[in-house]
Image 1 (cartoon, rainbow, N blue to C red):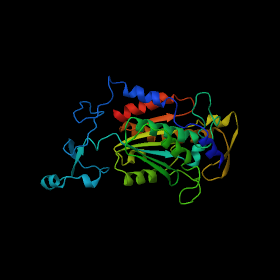
Image 2: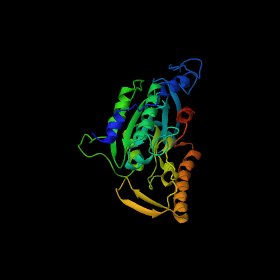
Image 3: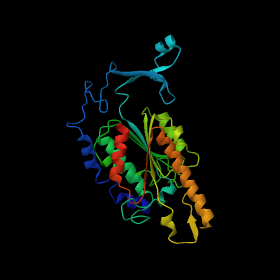
Length: 314
């Protein structure tokens, strides 16, 4: 058993405030969310009758071609799809990045910046497990996937559920040991685009949640094929590494190469510009309707989870 695997197994991954968060979110109404087709609140409407038609709209690239109304297409000359309330449930695909670079995030707990209190990619597992459990406890179907340069594991929860054990077990084990095909644990880079493409091809859910550091130069958030997107970036400021140093001696966790660079004005400006570019890409997606937040040491994660739920249901 590796140090990371042992550390993951030895601690709870779902945030302790998650149950109270779920209760508070459900309790913002006077009663629990209605589940009948007569419910007036579309935010929580849950029905499955084939006659419970919500809308007819034009076909989009993210839609399943099997849902095209071909009779209407023949009459109008354009492609349309029918939406039913069951298909519009706030189901979601959750992608959690466990690539090697996630090991440098450090603890997100207040007062525990840097690597203190964290081993490997535990913080990514914690955030992924917490979001997965919260959505399940709210009754939302979820398809949870972990990835690096390839897919690592998948947990299907088509009916949601409040049981913590399946979620904890999945995130404790996925990617920490050899995969079922006996390939070694992932230690490579991040391929977010391939993970999203695989998720889109293998799931009919229309909402996407990505937990990552987004260190993938080829990823373009606005190109996501999902209709609703949430991006949660785990981030550790470069200043945590420096502590007055005049040069950087870094071992790249994704390639294993050791790099030594002078930390002068030119290097700092280049790094800051890269950070601004990444933030700009995710910010552009937010302007187009995506949810985007950064989680770093000291971030109020309970507030972040609440904002995420508000955006998901908004």
